[in-house]
Amino acid sequence: MQQEEASRFGFESTAAEVAADVDLAGRVAVVTGGSGGLGAESARVLASRGARVWIGARDLAKGEKVAAGIRATTGSDAVEVGALELGSLPSIRAFAAATLARHPAIHLLLDNAGVMACPLARTEQGFESQFGTNHLGHFLLTGLLAPALRAGAPSRVVCLSSSGHRFGAVNFEDPNYKTRPYDKWEAYGQAKTANIWHALELDRRLQDDGVRAFALHPGAIITELGRHLTAQDREELMARAPAGGFRWKTVEQGAATQIWAATASELAGRGGLYLEDCHIAGPSKDLMSQVGYAPWALDAERAARLWSLSEQLVGAKSC
Image 1 (cartoon, one colour):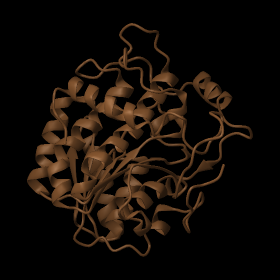
Image 2 (cartoon, helix red, strand yellow):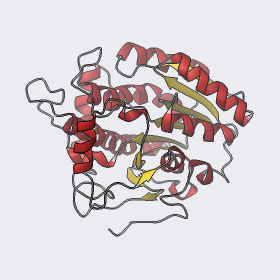
Image 3 (cartoon, one colour):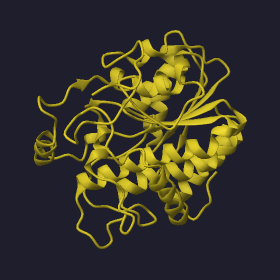
Image 4 (spheres, helix red, strand yellow):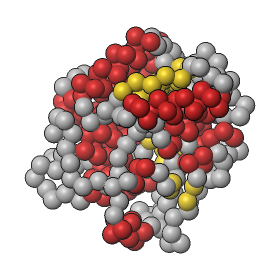
């Protein structure tokens, strides 16, 4: 695949390496899913570069433990944690209110949290859990934080997608699997496509206000995201792998692309892009490839349609 644009970082780069020359003093960063995995590493690196970091965590005690570790290793006391359950609209609204009370201006929002290939389950409001948590929860949260993102402009929103978006686009007739048979990988692909479309339409709507948005594939990393996977699930995932199998990253490498998206000077004034391995990705040659985006990924018309559907489902206008 021909890359659209390269950077000096790549597959093996770590988040710390990407941010080594970045000064984030006076900047506020909000990270969802910051109590482990890529979120915790991203929060640590942002704090190490001087950012004031506000972590959203489903498990508050676990989040506080991670924050304490970040404070100890970085020397920064500007790391706080708030309770955030992305499967509950009231929890999202409470977290957003707490965030705005502390931080009227936000410069970086990392929509990092998520679930993957879980058995059929529903959020508090009845949404299929992957679509509800990965997309609708972040959609509502980002919309509620939009005033602070405008106040912090130039600011950036980073939506964590996946190469798994190739497993399927959004089914507008039945996004929550009310009538069609449930397939956990198809549902995961739908949610990850929705993350890309969210970034695409968000960027279109807010770029004139100085807010830019990006979606990305972090790479194949072993984290708690795969906690629902059975041995059979792992076999099925490997069967979907590109020729030669997956190239695995460490957590430190996996967090690199979202830190690059959040801080890279070469992305200033740009947005609505799909990133991987710390560069701007191009279209994938085929759906079995581990690089590039699927043909439907940057469909602006469907991104706008998803925005309208999402507003309807969460019961709130956004941005």
